[in-house]
Every structure is written in structure tokens, then in C-alpha cells.
Length: 337
Image (cartoon, rainbow, N blue to C red; front, side):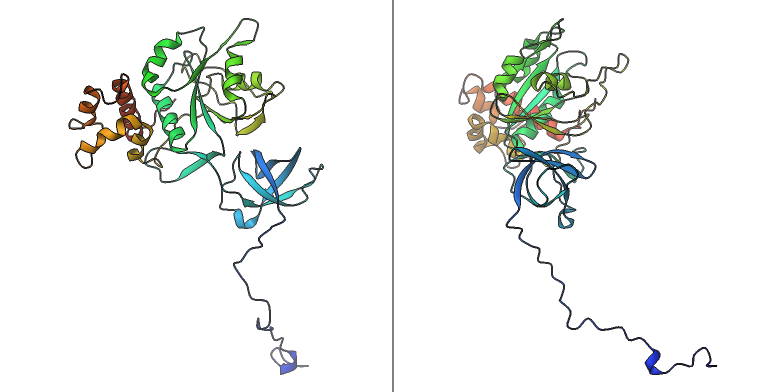
């Protein structure tokens, strides 16, 4: 009987070498035949995409595992794109974004989060009371809209509890369009037609604190949506988060509205404060006489003299104050709910 180690060469298995096998490559398929869809919802690793006139559920391809895919993205899909029950397509490409709304956790966080892609308009929803409006949060959302090259819109809710004119005085210098709404005793929303008019034909993102009436507004804009409606805590004055993920909904009269979860802070670490002046063309020329490194919110800023001399027009003082408010919002601490 042979011993434990009594083997000859014929009994030793030789592992074949890798020579002759196809070499590995980092080149990925082009997927030129991919079908284009629009992401309308994200839920636990599955993306809901609209392809022509039907809905497709998809997963993310391995090569995109580090790429955020958000509502509004136009994506390339391969696999079963029929949309039949139980089918699953694969997202293999993210088309170039025209716009993207982003924020950071705070103003020192280098990691930015893309919230929505390819939207035209940012509707900042704020209650005039219950909960109390937070102008600094509104200012920060305005900065994010300008940075994303999106048109801002203020949607003021609960007008039955406070006068909107007092709140809007702070934004007169920015010429930001706004609409005012309130829920009537019969449950209908006064001012809803004005909101429809502002949203028609556009893709609009709704952003706001919890409890401001955002979900109530969405349910009225798109009947049958059944977005959960929260209530304001009587002790803390804070709303309870009801929307847990962003979702895109088609409007009957054209356009899309994207409802996002309520936010408590809006960090702007990704926004360069030097770019704010670009959104105030009547003030920009006055910065030529500013000292080097001027923040435009300091004692020796030349914009004060520029405005005093009337070069910025009759609303110059209000516009300068608005610019400085936005600068302070960017350089300050994000206001929490």
C-alpha cells in the first residue's frame, strides 16, 4: 500500500495557464441599441422608467454602480423593456443632463447629492404660518436654483393664516414670481389655477419643509396620486416627513411635477459665492471698482456707491440687499427645521 506522499507525476494536477484566454479589458459595450427612458421613481435599488407610453422597471448595470441615477434622468435601457409584469430591464447609460439640482449635508461637506435631473423650474413651497416661514431656507433654495440654472418660483401656502405681502417684501428686489394658495373649508385649494398656469409645459421640482402643505398641493395637482399628508407638531412646530422618495408625476395639462421628501437643511458647499453676482446683471458692472477679493458684502464694496448714484435703477438698493442676503446664506450655517 503506497504511503501518504507516494505519488508520481501523473497524479499531480497541473493548473492550466491563462495564456491563450481572452484578455480582460476595461472597454464596455456601447449599447447603441439601448432604448431611452426617463426615470420617474426610485425605490430600493429599482428604477421606474417611462419609455414612450409604458412603464419599465429596471436595475442598474454593474458599471454604473458608483453613478447616482435620479428622478428626471434620461437613461439607456437594454434587456426586456416591454414593461410586462415580472420583467426587469437594465440601465446601462445615463444621458447628459441639461440641469441638475444638488445639495450637501452642510456648507462644509465636500460630498454633494444630486436630487433631481433635467428640471426647468424649482418651486419652493413655504407656509406663511404653521409652521412659521424660514426665509434663510428659502434663500438657500434660491441660490441652488440659480446655481442649477433653473427658474425659481415661490409657492406660498396657508394664506388664510397670514398675509403674504409682508413675507414677499423681502424678495421684491429679486423679482421672483410667486403664487399664493390656501385650503378652503370644503377642501378645495384657492389659487390652484394660478399654480397650474405656472407649471404648465414645464418640469418642476417641489422643495420645502415638512408640514408646509407640499403633499396636499401635489394631490390636488395630480388627482389620484395619494401622497401621504403630514401634520405639524403643536409642541415643536415641525412637520413630520411623509414623502420618503422623489417621484415624477405627469400633469393633465402638460408638464411634470416632481415631489421630493421634506428637507430640514440645504447645504451649499458646492456653490461658488463669486458666481452670485452673475444673477444680478445691473449690479455686475459696478464691481469693477471693488477692491481685490471683495466679497460684495463688506465696508469698502463699490456697489454701495454704484447703487447710490442710480446706475442700478430704482430697485437697485433692494437688489443689492437681496444679493447680500444670498451671500450671507451661502457663507452661514444651513438653517434646520
